[in-house]
Amino acid sequence: MAVKAAVVDSTKLEQKMSKLADTIGDNAEALKDGEKSGEKYQKALDKVAAEAKEVFGENYTEEFIKENLPLFIDWADGVEGSTEKIRNAMIDSMEEAG
Image 1: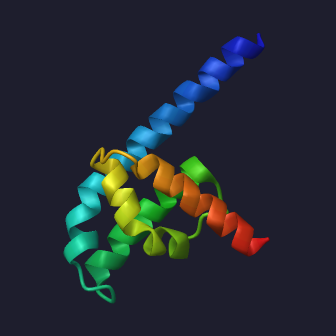
Image 2: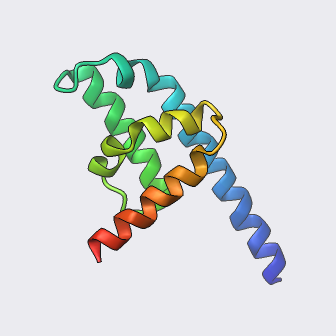
């Protein structure tokens, strides 16, 4: 049963990661080109941050997303090595927090 639960959890995580990538892709233009104080940019950031929290948990705030936005956009675009860079940013964030 543990293997089945792990497969289900893995599938759910993949679905959440896919949804996050889609959300980043759908909002990439507003995030890249938007005026950081503008409404369009903030709405796009809010959407991405909400999806990221679904994947990574509440520890990853909007500020974390903002600080690492280029990494998330690269990841959504399938840039090689971007997953590892996000992972390292997460580890650094946890070390700073704690």
